Image 1 (cartoon, one colour):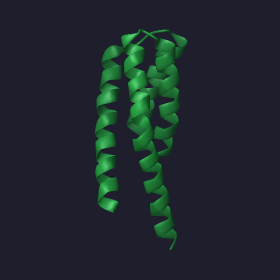
Image 2: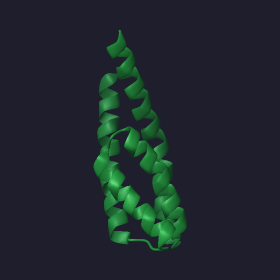
Image 3: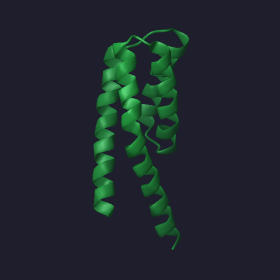
Image 4: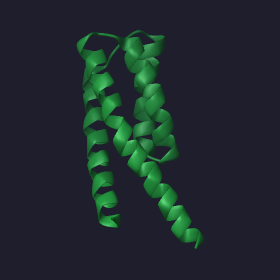
Length: 103
């Protein structure tokens, strides 16, 4: 019974992340297009919390670095941000597949 509850909770967290993250990805892309490093840093901060909860550690460290660049130094590393987007999209695809398999 407990394992079913844990699985349901994890699936709910994944579904929420998959549902909300595309909006954040749009914000990231717009912040790059409009050269808004603070917006990028703020968005990375929000995403980082979810990544930490889901234990996606390689993206947590990237998000932290991009957050610091945007918030503290007023810079955008376009190459690294694009790499982050690519990896995050791959994670989202994998999560969608896992969620579809559980239905």
